[in-house]
Image (cartoon, rainbow, N blue to C red):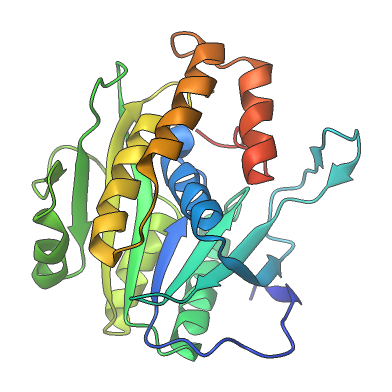
Length: 258
């Protein structure tokens, strides 16, 4: 059994009312990670827990100060019209068993706060850069799919478009059904090329979550960030300067997976 340790625990837990957990860990184009990190920053969400385990990749990141730091996964929280928990980080567990155990551990945290719903985020890789990425949704019940598929630019016909949803984004959907927790996944089209950052796909997901939960996100600020980074990226070829810009913004390595 893989041991997961909470390395930062607040003296007093926040009082949340049936929060929704939104997961955005690295994956194709880092779409989910980018979306969650944008929202955490915009909402000024507070860190709840840091999570550590020997099931994380056996590596460290080199920071701009030429120091090293271990990969990090953390849970954040924010009260609002709908209370939210966010799962964000640099990496995912390294193997299948660890991914299952980690996902179950996250569901335990979600249940600790009497959470009402799970939303996982990710990307769908295309052989070209989509001009206006579509967002597809699937879930563990028809009811929750209907709750999200009414948004503009969201498609619910995902069968045949994507294969298995791999990693934590998929496992949280399947394992939550065993606990009778409603769960949905939002997957945005992106370019299936290593090093490519699916910022436009992330933007479309942020728009869906903004409307679903009345977050009050300034989409224009995301557009400005996209413009700044794309100016330095070139056509699907991110420069080290562009990567450093995102690293400074989000405080983590944006190029680990995807």
